[in-house]
Image (cartoon, rainbow, N blue to C red; front, side, top):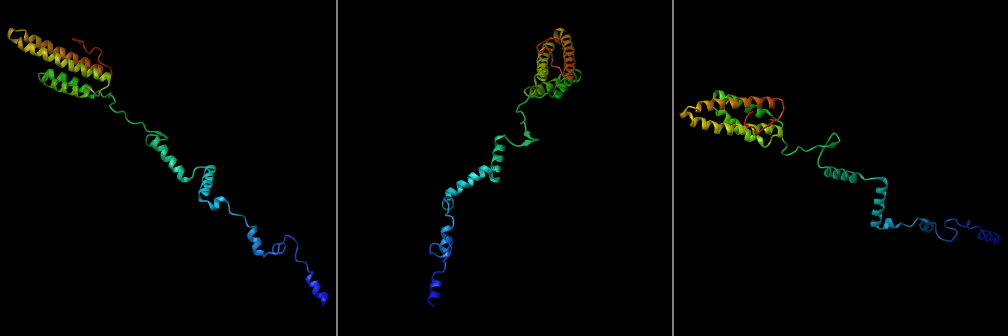
Amino acid sequence: MNDTIQGTTDAPQGRPGQPGHDAGLPADEHEVTASPTPTAAATDPVEAARQERRIDADAGLSPAAALGAAAGAGLGGGGGTTGGGPTAAPAVGAASDDKTIAIVNYVLMIVGVLATAGVLNLVALVLAYAKRSEASDWVRSHYDFQIRTFWISLIAGLVGIATMIIGIGFAILLLLAIWVLVRAVVGLSHVTSNRPYPNVQTWLV
């Protein structure tokens, strides 16, 4: 009987190192002590945010950051793009090569001399002044030529009318009509050929 009790008492308690037997502690306590301790990132929200930012930096931009970068690039590029490149803004106050009004003015000068005693020449003058500032250099030379032709013909016409009493006024008015017609025809040939008038300041043609 004593041997049985002694054998039971001397029974092995388990190998060293086994949970619940090596230190005389319950298995639950060993499992708790064996679990990893929480890191600083798990307990500190600021540290956790820093780690997330580092991960995002290694993996690339997040979708929100990519959208923000794209929006910034669009603003910095000066507006929308078409075909992969910036759209050129139209030039403000750019000179125009439209020669239509210049051609119309020469026709008005010719018809004005032949049919309206110079009334249409006044219309051509107004159009020349209106279009001169926005025209390119070579078209502007025709407007300047037309303006100069009108003022010279006006002065010469007044002189012709004033001298009709002494008989030379008719000759002055006839020569003046021929002079205006020739200048209008020459100017028309230049403008239809896309050439500036060669000598705007000339008194002849």
